[in-house]
Length: 154
Image 1 (tube, one colour):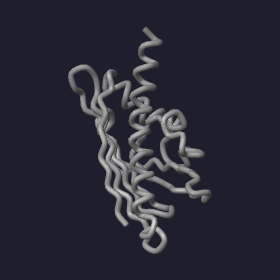
Image 2: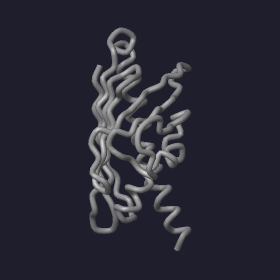
Image 3: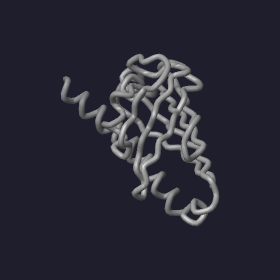
Image 4: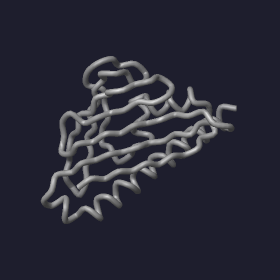
């Protein structure tokens, strides 16, 4: 089963602020509440992301807890970064792109998930719908958090 998803959102904040917030693992719990834990486990631990950095994401779906190790494979600071799974139940790739546009930043997130056959094939429509909703909610949460925090700091 393959799930592909691209979603973008316009955030009324400069690219530097959006990139800094999204790439910082410390902020992950604020916009990815479905993840039980997201931590840097290897490589550089800057406030953002660096090529070769590895992160562990622990999550619980359908009552089953899984762990996925992701590695940053392509990083262009302030512009884009990609994480790929190196351990876990699925083959996974996520790319985040940050584009300056009039009035702020266009944040685009692209996912490619390869799930094993068997039960996943039977549950494919349910799993795909759940993942897409979750990913869209993440993007909306990022927008809300950054725009609300920006208004408070004025």
